Length: 342
Image (cartoon, rainbow, N blue to C red; front, side, top):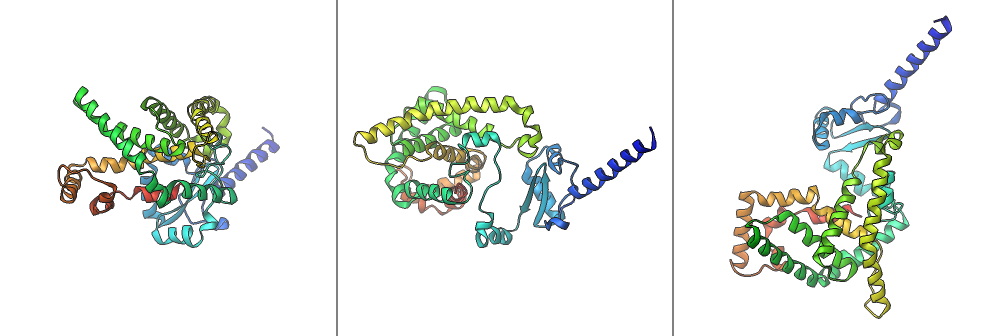
């Protein structure tokens, strides 16, 4: 090895160390909050993966060291973690438009969001405002929610019959699966204006659950350089997209035909997105809420509250639920998730 080779190698090492030091730091010229030092190229990504525990626990530990706001570099993405309520209010309320948009999506998520054209994927702007306005006016406005009461009563009747039949047949009840099926049936009926057979609801629910699982963050989301190594996952996503369309398009066409022949008009934008948004309520956050009701102490307290309100034999109405303070305290998910989808 001659002198030129040595100098070239030494220069490459020095430049690599300088680049690593620059990329592994947070703050400084970036004006970002301080955070944990990272590795070359991948930043803090593999440091998080190798801990093999939920990301929120990692954030909790880093908060003790770096304070309520800190920066993490996850591959080619830079995350600013905010854990203080006042700072969150400043960012999301006082300076909402500045932080209202969304980062770039992975190819898989772009596939299912039709190029970021759904209410929970569109960037902040005219399209997002139009989708949100349609969603609020047609789905979650008080007048609409009240008008959908017959759908909830129909679904709850099926829910109770299904539970009784399963208990009579097996002596046990798969409560979580039954709750997911009931919620999905309500959302499908709201979206498409028709009562759907349980067999089709189960098929749609399975497809939407697969969509949520395949859309979870993966390594190429943080390191796009690895995307060619995940071609099989993209092919699976395309097949799943075809299955999703095969499930939902017949319902869309049937609804359009119903309207063409004189049915009542109803907005039809983003039906599949609405169903997915509702099924997500029974994904980990929603299931955590249901799990809290499986706690014996919580069950007993909810039961005592219900009995005190309506007795042991009377049927609970939606108006009664609003007057159950303990149930309202442990059920904060709908207002949170309803705003998060906007």
